[in-house]
Amino acid sequence: MTTPAAGNRQIRLAARPSGLPVPTDWESTVEPVPEPADGHLLVEVSHISLDPAMRGWMNDVRSYIPPVRIGEVMRAGAIGRVLASRHPDFAVGDHVFGPFGVQEYAESDGAGVRRVDLGIAPPETHLGVLGATGLTAYFGLFDIGRPQPGQTVLVSGAAGAVGSVVGQLARLTGCRAVGIAGGPDKCRTLTEEFGFDAAVDYKNDDVPAALRKHCPDGVDVFFDNVGGTILDVALTRLARGARVIVCGAISQYNNTEPGPGPSNYLSLLVNRASMTGMVVFDYADRYPEATAELAGWLADGRLRAREDVVEGDVTSFPETLLRLFTGANTGKLVLRIR
Ligand SMILES: NC(=O)c1ccc[n+]([C@@H]2O[C@H](COP(=O)([O-])OP(=O)(O)OC[C@H]3O[C@@H](n4cnc5c(N)ncnc54)[C@H](OP(=O)(O)O)[C@@H]3O)[C@@H](O)[C@H]2O)c1
Image 1 (cartoon, rainbow, N blue to C red):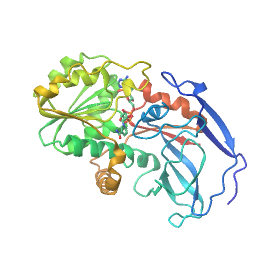
Image 2 (spheres, rainbow, N blue to C red; image 1 turned 45 degrees about the horizontal axis):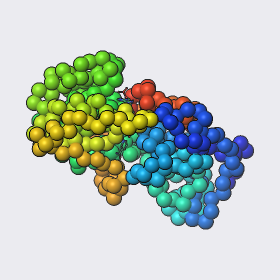
Image 3 (tube, rainbow, N blue to C red; image 1 turned 135 degrees about the vertical axis):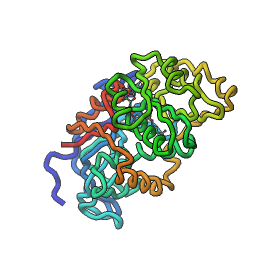
Image 4 (cartoon, rainbow, N blue to C red; image 1 turned 120 degrees about the vertical axis):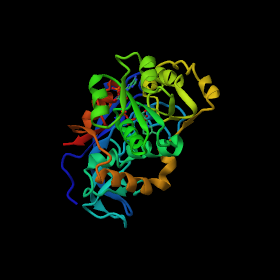
């Protein structure tokens, strides 16, 4: 292997943020590019996934995954090309997805690494519809939401990575899909590009009135990505037997104080409804079946992939991450390494 002269640039967590992450929460380091140990591989990272969950991983709290330690390379799913391999399952030149982190080169023992087929879709789509994004939408909606044809599926964060897939899968199932997103442009994208039946602009519309209008018979499935006030309002529109999927709560991730709880939760009782949290990692043994189905819909045009690709080097990561919290992205946010 030829060792790249400039070394391996990395972004490490320097401090635990209070509120939105600021530049001093990060440190940029350069280390020698590692040689792969026996049974390991070396990957040149080309595309890094940006996920709202990253904000949670920066907090020192108990969660479904341990926090990133201070001084550690920031955790991230990424795609890259195998530069050197002493691993039996991977060959030089393979394109792979793995938990490679925010760095230019990653040395890995192969845990969580899988080959990606760039013949069926570009790398950014393997981080989006064909990656954790699509899988989250798929298992959250189908396993927990259990939508039936003719039912109404309401989605918050609907123009984002997960939300835009949920709406499309709801339509594929014969449901009415109603999306909530910020701003007229995103709402237009929901109906014109992703095929939602109706869109609610939470920044400009009267959300309770808009939900009454667009969900006249109530909401059978609410796929929630944002939490907070939107969750509280959506709870007032539940149909009898509704399923609420707690996928995420991005409106709460930068809170410095605990936010108020949902005051309308008794709607669950009145409507014999359920509210269930989901973590996509729990479905790992079923990823292949779901990815094959998603890839089929992508290939026959029934599912659209939309990515928001920012070009830069790994030092662009901290600023790019903030785009998720300002709503600057539509679809899956990816950093493509130049
Ligand atoms: N449970 C799991 O296993 C799992 C897996 C993946 C993702 N998730 C969760 O799924 C959700 C969506 O993730 P994603 O990757 O698809 O991100 P995303 O939706 O592509 O990006 C975040 C979007 O959230 C919206 N947003 C930001 N701040 C907001 C606020 N204060 N109130 C309302 N909306 C706000 C913005 O859209 P607007 O412009 O519309 O505001 C922004 O574009 C997140 O909560 C994430 O943590 C969960």
